[in-house]
Image (cartoon, rainbow, N blue to C red; front, side):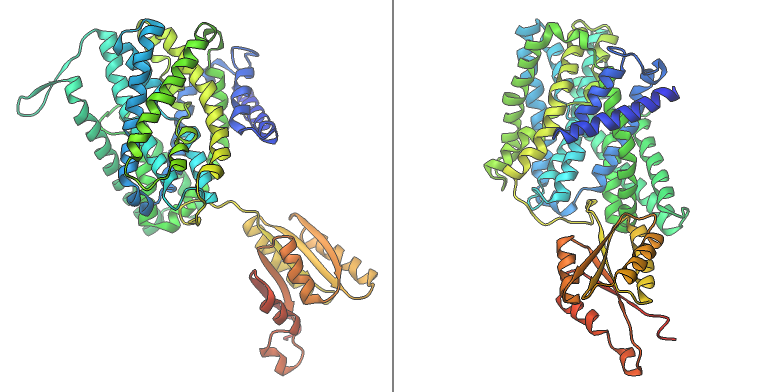
Length: 543
């Protein structure tokens, strides 16, 4: 099993990186790696890992749902609240019905079996949509109107609805009847009549439980300080979120998916610093979870069952998306402030299938429902077609269809390359500047540009400075640069050329009146630089 884990991580990572270098989404490479490692081709993955694949996918989905919740913006949701609510019900409903109707002549299904297929195919994949929407938010695409937030929320709500209907249909088709439910007061309803109450109950309880658990985490982690660092914060939050996802298997009264997203959302509202630490922690967890999720997804796809249903399966997907789902998108955004380009973005941005299909696609076959093998094949086809297509189309069409707004760094992790510019001379203060720069670089995992400006050749002094730099920055990525010319001008220009985040430089004062002033070079750089300047005082000279 350990060898299989090694193969999954290494093959998933490197094949994913190859896909990215070919300008394709990384998940395409990971799915292909899973297909190659899985029982369909090389059969390298241990059977016990394949047997627990659904549990591992549950962990990965929990992580991505927490990332989604920690990235939601209350103001944007308030602005687009009705759109998000409609996106949670209308597209899923219209797509499921359209698929049910077209499945009747194509596969000779009855309407309920076709609707069962529609519920499986209509579910949206958090594994594809969530990281893509968070990426758009970090870049600012569509954030002014809250489009990524509306899609994230609508996706979670639609999965709640479809999974509930799917469960009812499986029970009905497997058992051949619908059981009655007796409410307090003696009122008896069929499962279909009880469905609206059940959907509302799962949503309300999911939100309430997410709220209460977020309060508890803030009390434990921030107020009582039971943890000492961000790693422990992430560990406790991840275990709590996983418990919320798993509990509905034994106490099916709320949506675990929605509860986890709500927990992340309320954590931002209650304690923004804690939410920021957790956001970074879950970003790191996702690096590993993403590989397991998509490699095991590829390994679970039954390639041999795709041949007979390829063309009708593609037709099912086309009708469901281009007719059913587009009708739902139109109705969801009717009367909103979205323009036609933003509405059109829902086609690539809200169509990907992967996680839910892999989790429930085989259940009808396992329960002995007629047509279960066809349902499984179409579910596998939907993953192979829409997951890579959606992962490619979202970043490709977002710049063409959405407007770019201002990024809110309190709601998303803005991943930028941090570069520090250390301006040094050949005096003793250069050691202190390099030491300070090294400390800052280690704290933020930054790269360093060490700049020395000279007016005349100083080969021996420069070589000593190079050796000192190599010693003090031995565990940091750095580049040693020498320039000639005006010192302040070259420092400022180098900061622009290398896109430095900060400039670190020294200040020397040898006379009493100089102690209260910044050196002339430092002052000139501060006055003309567009990036922050950290001035290090010569502690040796001040003694």
